[in-house]
Length: 510
Image 1: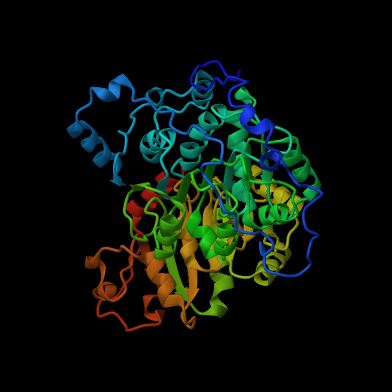
Image 2 (image 1 turned 90 degrees about the horizontal axis):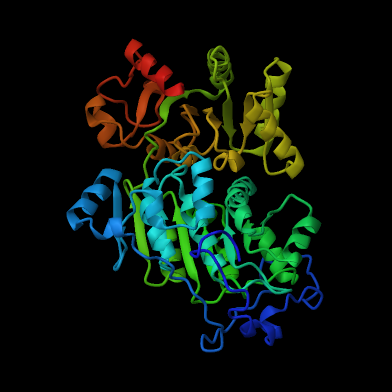
């Protein structure tokens, strides 16, 4: 048996006969798959499965029992708690939110790790996400990056796995987590390892840019949890290196980001390989119509949990400054800003650029001038990217120049500076991942107006008369407003940082 609690214990013989004589169900098909094709669209050799639910083995997915403390809480008390935590719920039959970890009644080996991690109370998304996920319901969780959503789906996944029959030879994973980037996938696997090792749950991380051999060996040996990026997983599925016939717990992490990166066709191909009565949990920082359509197609009778506002907005936990300038001025302004940042105790800085070439060029230019800068982008090998991130985390190279590959999943505190990139990446920065955002944007760019609206949305209307035309939220100051590529404001738009604001900035950095 796994763990030390009846909540997570399993009978080794329970349900075993459902799989022993079904060779097709458990077959990996590693050497019998179709020969690889060099060209073509990803997933085109995967055929949509025709599922007959009457023939599929049954599985459990509802393990939730409401804690006595919650049974005695009135509806008014729970509504006030949700209001305080900014929790909004859509859907019927949603269980009450928990207010403490013990109310989720996780097995003791999970609670022990929570104590070791010194977590005091669940975050807002965990408070409502734990009961919903443990009760076997499909759900959509909308919360900003860094809100604790990884634990919100991983801890229920551990409980789910421990109630399923043990893996047989050739079985694929029970839990599949699809993530947009390898950095996020690696981060999720680290959390999976910390919480799964006490119950001997095996996991692997499948992503491009790394050797396939070790990943294939992990899958062939059998893993209960697979964290994967869409491209590499499609590759393995097409070549018969794994299968998803045992998958009953599906997580789509950062669904909006995956759609932004063009992964929708791959995601649909992958989901077609999973039984339709699975439990599906979708997580997103935003709620555009594309994500809504995905939820409608993949989820059944789901509950939607929203933390904060539904509309796309800036992360108000980040101090944001926008400097509108000419392209020829950006280097000088960047180096001036870096002089200020490097004089501070906490000086880690991420500089975002839009292209790989600009990333390399800016890194060479800064290193030539003596700046301790390193860069990562999609053309870098995975070992090189891991090494650069390790150097950055340790502080040996406090300046990281990156494309959007580093826009999520780093999980560290740093200044961020947009040299030339799509500003909307900052909407997804975790609230602990940045102290200051300073974006230097050039007036001639045709799509600047749209990007400025995404980043600046929410500035108080009293600040200027042109806010009604371009709502600008959460910005501490806008430098050089006369360079803005639209109508001139009737009132000068310049919010200088005074002594009190500087004190606020210093307080936020500690």
